[in-house]
Amino acid sequence: MTHRKPFVAGNWKMNLDRRSAVDLVARMREHLGSRTDVDVAVFPPAVYLDEVGRAVAGSPIRFGGQNCCDEEAGAFTGEISAAMLSDVGCPLVLLGHSERRHVYGETDELVQRKVGVALGHGLEVVLCVGETIEEREGGKTEEVCRRQLTAGLSGVAEGDMPRITIAYEPVWAIGTGHTATPAQAGEAHGYLRGLASGLYGEGVASGVRILYGGSVKPDNVAELMAVPDIDGALVGGASLKAELFLPIMDLGKH
Ligand code: PGA
Image 1 (spheres, rainbow, N blue to C red):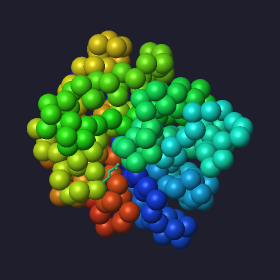
Image 2 (cartoon, helix red, strand yellow):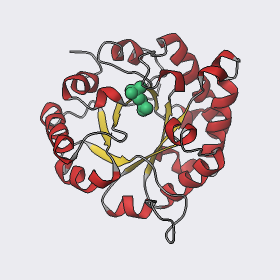
Image 3 (cartoon, rainbow, N blue to C red):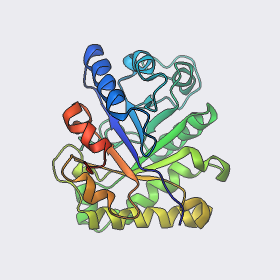
């Protein structure tokens, strides 16, 4: 069986300020030391990327944009390009987050274009998918995950798959305190891995990391991580405070 190194990422959304962002990564850096048993990343607000990049330089902590534009450059007021993320040294970008899809109306097609542009600029993509509560209750969880994943990956060549991480984030679990049970998450992750296998073959699919996101906390991370198809966590609220995020980086083991 392919070993997939756990990956814990903090999505700060529109939170923190310059000072608290730098303090938080300093605490993370100190806690992590030179450990290599887990991959750690943060997704700061774009205006702090440069500063966070400097604060993590030389450490194993990576950082990325929370979004990027589907266009290369030009008259797109308010947008940030993949080239700009790459220019400030970001290795990563988060795409298709449910807040982008549901608050800002991003479609599968738009997310797909963003994935293509981001990969074209050498970025690694964390591609988020997940169903709303109405979709889950309507028995549409798999249909939604299939639609979002297949669209998001539709332009992605097999050779680029090592630069893709999938995040399963049920919308009803995000910021609500209602974490998916390990069984619910495991079922969705297994389904997503099966889809990846159908698209790229089992060898590729068994190497893709699939993160769970939605109310991950220090006291539920261990049980989620115990599920074979869950390879890490994408953490919102609990990534904003060192006392919550450091134990999550430890996967709840200490
Ligand atoms: P949450 O957010 O941990 O606050 O539920 C997760 C996310 O939106 O990535």
